[in-house]
Length: 103
Image 1 (cartoon, rainbow, N blue to C red):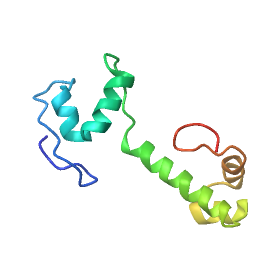
Image 2 (image 1 turned 180 degrees about the horizontal axis):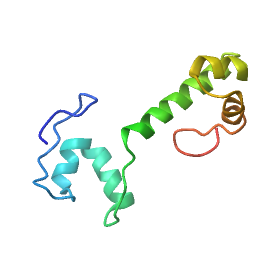
Image 3 (image 1 turned 60 degrees about the horizontal axis):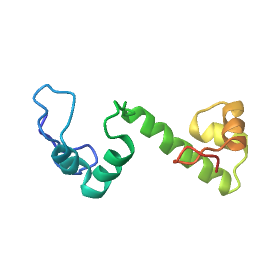
Image 4 (image 1 turned 90 degrees about the vertical axis):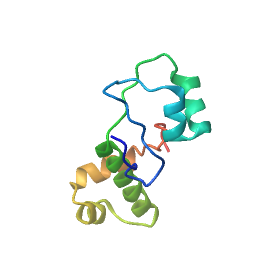
């Protein structure tokens, strides 16, 4: 591995084929505060990390919700973002914030 993160963040340590990461490795990748929070909430638990596709979906949802905040209609949102009008309506009626709770 040993390459920069896609976001231009810190160095990703060589895992030498292991699936687990040490506390030092987490701190290098996430920074001390984020690593401590992760260990506090999830320490000792096997965690599945979402992939970049999930991040793209969240970003699209945020852009769609901003369009609604700016007065767009479901038809305008559907055309602009390449989704169906029904999907646009559902996203407007059931917005989910980044923390996973209703907006």
